[in-house]
Length: 246
Image (tube, rainbow, N blue to C red; front, side):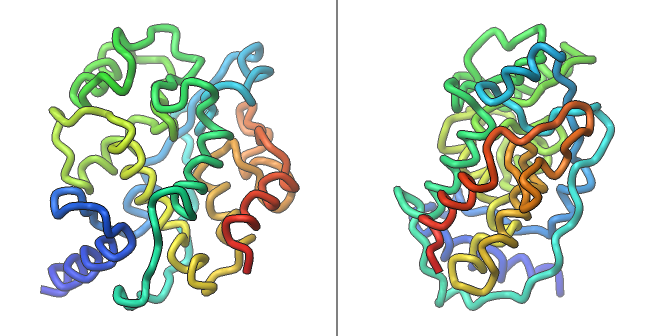
């Protein structure tokens, strides 16, 4: 019964954060450790690492290592006091900044550059089932995919939490919804309401996306299997201050 009540409250929270979503699009906001414990890294070649700023880069490293520390538990917020717009403002602009660090020019159709065997179709034309099959058919290589470079455990876990079946296509809208779960868990609502410091939120994002720097100026995983931030802290902070000026 407690779990059912918690899920109901989280459903209401997600609907308020993203008011343009229909009932079928609403997602469940689960604790960070539900996904965090499953995340693993990918390993680029040395030559590819030199071009990292222009290519998909999320979670490069050695598969089997976790890059995700759980975030501190945050107090629940009243859903009727949350006012976030998805289009062209905070959520969209944060996503764009992450994609700048992670996906390169291919954006929603990005595939991790270390993957020697690429999918036969553009990612946005594939169903989740087709992506899972590509992953299973090409073991031993990186499989980060899409604008936010989801790795297999993260993609499958988020898709399951959103109720996305294998026949769902990996469209830009679907990719954004998957990323939004991670943004909310990192503190998007709190920072938007002034209840979390901007730098705290930025450091939380850096724990999720290795291409983003933390307040040290380096990737949270700098030096681990070649990881390196693809933008400076000064640039990251300047852009985030424009999104969250207070």
